[in-house]
Length: 158
Figure 1: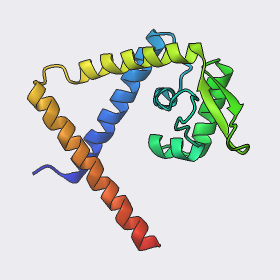
Figure 2: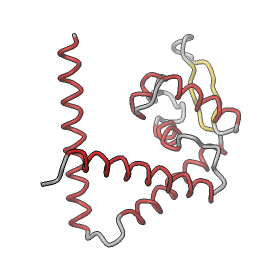
Figure 3: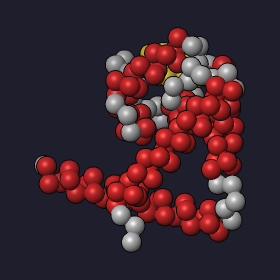
């Protein structure tokens, strides 16, 4: 029988190896300064500031990425200094800034997607399509189970 300790250790090792592989791919593409590539991809998918777009607040971005709002703020500052994003006041809500990708940021998003593809290709090498689908289903179920647990702990605290 597989121990929970072994499963936890393997999950952490896979997560760390994946993170390292993505960072290596980004470095090879000249994007070492992009600390959280998923942040850029989320910003890109939020509509680029077009009317009616879903622009995420820092707290929402933090929840999506499972990092602290302070880490999001630092990443946004770094991306802004690097010329990947710029901020402008929201016309609908003066308390909120829109975070928009620059042309450099949009190009970086494409490079991030290519890096993710290369890492996924390496990670899933030798897996059949059926095994890939099973793995995806298992991972979705794990996430759902963990989300339920978070939900139950929050209910107990409240």
